[in-house]
Length: 100
Image (cartoon, rainbow, N blue to C red; front, side, top):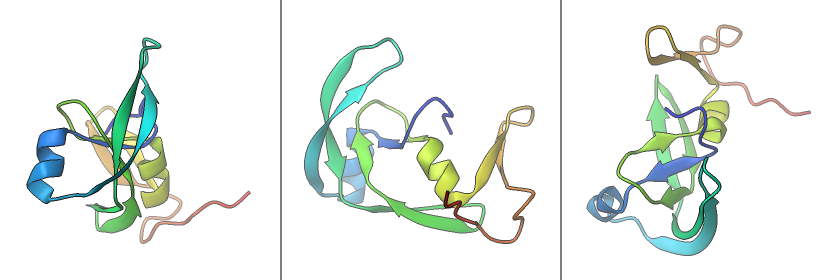
């Protein structure tokens, strides 16, 4: 989990291991302001804490990062003290998508 990241990030090595197709390119901006063009995968199914969603991933780095969008879609919250993700206490049994 990376609450500073926006979306799902998967390293090139894991993309290759999973056989994911790169469907396009996108500019990614890092916390230090540096920008670079990176690959974007086809939709990936992410499952965590018994919940699942489907999102595209940016291909970069050496770690898998689940960013804010993925956490929102799964309706999971970071428990920083215990370094884990927990279901939203308001919706403990299933994810709820907020529409405003």
